[in-house]
Image: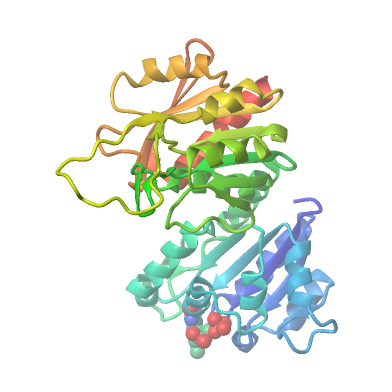
Length: 395
Ligand SMILES: Cc1cc2nc3c(=O)[nH]c(=O)nc-3n(C[C@H](O)[C@H](O)[C@H](O)COP(=O)(O)O)c2cc1C
């Protein structure tokens, strides 16, 4: 942790006293720690304890800081934020994006990884509201250090005890290491379907949702990369902290991709781009005059092949959604499009498109292969980036 800048947020639960020990350990391990507290946390422990341990000022309010906008400076200077303990109340506020005190305002302004260690009574932890908020925060990339089971302040046993200091520290270290693993890399990710219109209201598209590309963009940004996400039509939210450029058609993606992709260290192409588009587009809505309609389709530009031809030193990873002879087709694509690796998923059995889960196999060289297993897309995104980082290093 030598020199790591840590912003520790403490909220108002019994376990707030444990944040003092955590602070002391972080400082002893060489971290520079800034502490911010909710007003309710002050009912449990005094700011003086933290300022003595860190030899730095502690911020408890937006209004009495010696400088005007300390909350922004604090999150900009930090490498990571740690919330310990996180109350049910604070978790709900973070999930909703409220910003009504020092802690919530700073965390809403944070583009750094956030490790959150909840602590509360078991019934509060198991309440559907808390479950939903935790799921929301996890989906946004928060690292949740699940509470332990054990003796609770109510003098009963249950789940809700703040995780052990060692577990919190391990998560902080792992998250910091992850944050640095792609530091300075320029990464471009394409995601989502394309849409090819044949009149002003009708188009040909596919079932892609962009979930995989968004998970990859989020993960790469969390690892310190500068990420550009070229994003097709989707209702999903792009992650915070990445540059987003939108496309609708294959041609638009083609034109966009040759710009940012050109200078990138790594390009991951997850977009499900149309292979064909209607050869003609009517400017007015087609009327149902006859019974049938024949739409002639023409080829769209091959975006991946175009990037492959001009890739220079860029490490290029393609995606192949196949319904049959998966790996054979993907290997053929790997060679033909000058890719460095290709991730294959089987979309014949409802894996891949739109589903929360996916199963991926990464192929490279003539015979190399790594099964990344079946998991939720954020987990697969992390596994894929681990594998790609290894390949990039070996090159
Ligand atoms: C003695 C006592 C202990 C508490 N312990 C917890 C706790 O461990 N976890 C929790 O979520 N809330 C706990 N609460 C409730 C919170 O203090 C309360 O929800 C408060 O509004 C939290 O404010 P904050 O999130 O801004 O710090 C406790 C309250 C009291 C009076």
